[in-house]
Image 1 (cartoon, one colour):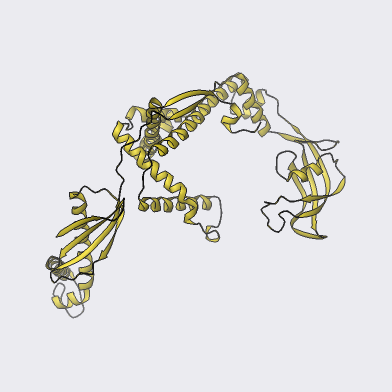
Image 2 (tube, rainbow, N blue to C red):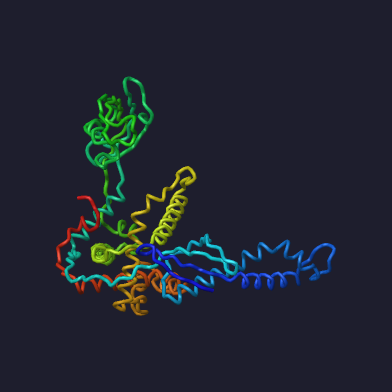
Length: 434
């Protein structure tokens, strides 16, 4: 066996492999003899089939298997001896050169990039700061009340936050258009469920009133045949209901899972949950900034093979997600290019994180993993069962270890970077509308 290596571009390598024909033939013959000892064929006793018949029937298969195994062995020895870190799988091609004694091949593959993590001392990071006070607890309770809103009939003109039930008929150039008609259609005013001009026309109307008005669809409306077009709507308001928010009392506390209806206990639970969520949101925003900084400080080239593998993984995850939502994915072709940017970012970050972890010794420690599992378990009714569940399967702990490693990298970057605290706005941090 002989092998040589040539570099084609920054990450691509080409390895020339030479395999002795005599070695292939010898191993093939030994394999066929072993097969013959167990072969059964009409007209011959078991194990007594003539070798030439065995070779005629299974020779091509045996040669292919032996050659594939020999190529794997030679390729593995070559990359190991030259300390090449192969990314993905090699592409094996026969060479055009002829030899009476050897089979010549080329293996084309990519290697992992070699780099030293960039300097993070000039990185600027804003750390959101937010203390959970009674005001945040009150605001959260208001949100929880709105999620449990009920509606009651009211004899007045419809206003924002009222629930209305209407019949409507839309016409374009005097003819009804698809999707422009409904009966007993309910929606809540001011919640963005209908186009603003449509809601404005309904607002101020009382039950039993009928109204006709013009509406111009936005230029970017999803239905292309209606985008930018002016149509006429006729609506009949059949019901107007005002919202009724539940009182914050023992019944409300019980609906929130507080068995004895203790409002103070409910507020304490909300406070604890809010603090956990605020901590998680702040960590997420810090992590996003750190990952962006790592990408900027380490402009590396990544193997296309790894990006393609990640694209396939993301596509499969998208298919599974759609199937779980009850969607027919066969009617919805998924395009690889949809995931190209995301895949490249994930692969690039993965390589950078791995190098930083190795260089700075930021591996996950068992006590860190345990602490994260225990923290996660606190949001469940029976934390000890959750902890046992995590430790029952190594792959479950593997996911936690990945998060711990990311957190270690974030802490390392923050220790090097210029960090300034910035007061966070509760609604913005929690992603809530004002």
